Amino acid sequence: MKKVSIVNIKGGVGKTVSTVNIAASLGELNKKVLIVDADAQSNATQYLNCYSPEGISTYDVLMDKDIDVNTVIKNTNVKGVSIIPANIKLICENEIVNDTRRSRENRLKKALDNVKEEYDYVIIDCPPSLGIITTNALVASDYVLVPIKIDQFALDGFGYLLDTIDEISNEFNPKLDFTGAFITMDKRTAINRKMKAKLKEALKDKLFNVSIRENVKVVQSTFEQQPVITYCKNAISSKDYRALTQEVMKHVI
Image 1 (cartoon, rainbow, N blue to C red):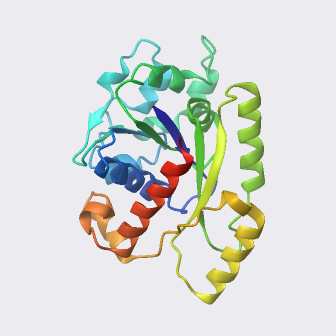
Image 2: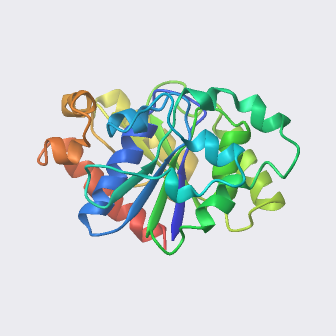
């Protein structure tokens, strides 16, 4: 089971859309995929029409050592894709921090170890922060993908994120690897091409070749609560997400 965190401490960069559509693309390839929604905003859960404000969720996985993770996992309407849903309870991150009865950093890892024979991939949609929930995601993961939206602040906080990945690798999870970054909402304008060249210079081979073109079908798909690759199979963003997934699979081995 390959475990991937999709993370950026900036919001609005396409983390959730990328999580759901990479998962759906893997499902199209007959892979079994588990999404973990680790964000209190619960956008991945809502995107897949699995939201329940009072239901058991990622929060319970992190707080209840006796919970059977299989009771939390929900099937979705997307081929091959299941989800550990989130809800607003995840906003109580301090409750996890203050719960010193057992180690706090590896709770998600322990839960996922119980389903490692059931899935080919786990994809974790992380919150836009580097608190204890993201720490749990990174401790549980083998790979880290970073979506980047091109603007003048594209790399703000990027160095801090890489330092955090290194710290977690050294202290908790030597398998953890910054696999690469990919560009989302690419307008293919002259300024975007200039910024992409700067990103390539900064990230070198850690910047994936495939970028996700900006496309209204992505927004429409969120209202329809289905991945864009199933909502509009031939949309440019659908083609891009399938191509990105192929590139991801070459790195996540």
